[in-house]
Length: 382
Ligand SMILES: Cc1cc2nc3c(=O)[nH]c(=O)nc-3n(C[C@H](O)[C@H](O)[C@H](O)COP(=O)(O)OP(=O)(O)OC[C@H]3O[C@@H](n4cnc5c(N)ncnc54)[C@H](O)[C@@H]3O)c2cc1C
Image (cartoon, rainbow, N blue to C red; front, side, top):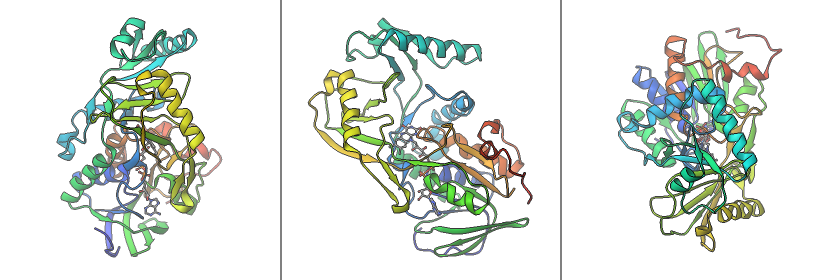
C-alpha cells in the first residue's frame, strides 16, 4: 500500500519495513493486535532485501545463541509460518581453519560451547573438511561446522512475511517516513510524511536510521551505519555446497542453486544514511574476491556480474538492541543487528510481540538491553 495517508489509531505502529519490522508485524497480528508498518522507502529496500541470505548459527556471539537456535527451528518450519519456503535450503555452514593456530582457536571455541551445553557446532578434522569441501585449496587442517545451517532468499523472505501479515490485516504504508515520535503515558503520537497516527505501542525497527528515533526519545545510542559489500560471479559448474567462512580472514562464500557464486563476509564500502545509500570501495571488494579465489581455485578467472552494498546498523559490541525503551515504556527497539540479523528475523518478531502482549518474552533479552549503553541514565518514567 503506497501513498495512503497515515491516520487514525492502531495498537502497534512499526517503524521500518525490513525483515524485523515485518516479522514483528506478523507475530503481533497473529496475537490479535491491529498493526501499521511505516516504511520511508519500500518494503525490503534496505539490508533485509539485499543481504547474503546466510541462515547461520555458526560462530554466534554467546549472548545470541539461544535466540539463534530458536530462530533456526522457525526457519526449518518457515513455510508453515509465512506460506512460502523463502528459498530456504539446508546446505551446512563451515568455518575453515587455514593454519594450525586458527585450528587451535576453533578447538577452544568448540570446547567453550560444549561446556555451556551447546552441541550445534561440530569440529571437523582435515579429512572431514575435505569431504565437505573437496574444491578447497590443499593444506587446511580442519574447521568448525553447523551442518543444519543454510541460506535463504532475503528479498523473497521479507516479502513473504509482509504478505502473510497483510493477509492478517496489517497495513503497510510505504513512502511514509516517520518524522517525529511523541511518547506519552496513554500512547504515542507519530508524525509522518503522510499524516498523523496514534499508537498504543511503537516499535523502532528502523535499521541504520534507528538512532534518530532513539535521540527523539532522549536515549542516544552509539549506532554505526555500515555498508557490507557483496559480489556475484557468472554461473560456474557446481563445486561447493555449504556456505563457507574463514577464521583468520574476512570471507563468506556460497554457490547459489543457479551456479553463481556469492562472495561477501564483511568487507565494507561507505554507508551514507543521510543520502539513503552506500558507495562501493572497489579496492576492498577486489581483496574480498582475491581471498575467495585463493581458497577456491575454481573461482579464478570467473567474470564478476554484479557488486553492491547494503546499509546496516552496527553496535560497538556487535550484538543488537532488542529492548524496551529506557525512557518510554510503550516504545520498543529492535535494531543494530551488526550484519547478522537476517537469521534472527523470525524469532525477534516473536519475542518482541510477546513483550508487547504479555510484558515478558519467552527467551531472555537482558543482554540486548538499550541500557547497556546508558549506564548512568534514569529508568523508564512513562
Ligand atoms: C550486504 C549484507 C549482507 C548481509 N548478510 C547477512 C547474512 O548472510 N546473514 C544474516 O543473518 N544477516 C546478514 N546481513 C544483516 C541483515 O541483512 C540485517 O541484520 C537485517 O536485514 C536487518 O533488518 P532490519 O529490519 O533491522 O533493517 P532494514 O532491513 O534496514 O530495515 C529497516 C527499515 O527501516 C526503514 N526506516 C528507517 N527510518 C525510518 C523512518 N524514520 N520512517 C520509516 N521507515 C524508516 C528503512 O527504510 C528500512 O527499510 C547482511 C547485511 C548486509 C547489508
